[in-house]
Length: 251
Image (tube, rainbow, N blue to C red; front, side, top):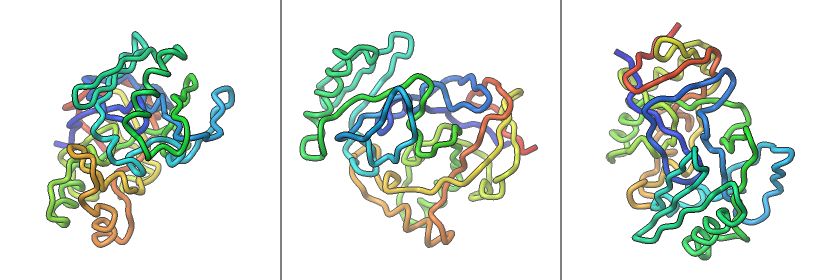
């Protein structure tokens, strides 16, 4: 059976994943609070009053800053607070206030050191997602494809390297590439349309447990497939709630 193995969101772009027990999805939207915040690494030009898509290099991200993987982050959506911790140090800031944002910025500034290109600033805008793509999508990772990459590379690949929202079990490796343009259902309600494969970046080279680049995932995929794609972006076309163990059915 093809099914959901796990669900995760990334409230702050470049920081750690949060595992979810269920997600209510709306048509044409991302996971709620997924990439709702980003941390500007020097002036980016982002305008909260007129939010637009910007490339990830404008923000702290695994692609440029592997050691971010070692910072544990937890976002309390109801309270609006973000807690960061690393090696015994911890800070909690209310992201709805300038004072709370300053606490988070100060913590990350001390941690990032010379990797700062300028002042760090927490960014957000209601309804905006700092996704890697401008389209509002949900990212699906085929766990069998990740395992195949690991076998080819001779390393165990934690699928969190791919920073996807939905991990899917029970598929053959790479079959997700045949889904582009097709619709599929997750659980009893939610329906999606796969719109494009996900081109991978240096973030996939980062070991989440050690915060260093250790496996040439991009090169391995290129050797196997001739491209650097793994996973699919899909649009929500029918709202619904999805949960781990829900079936995934191609329509």
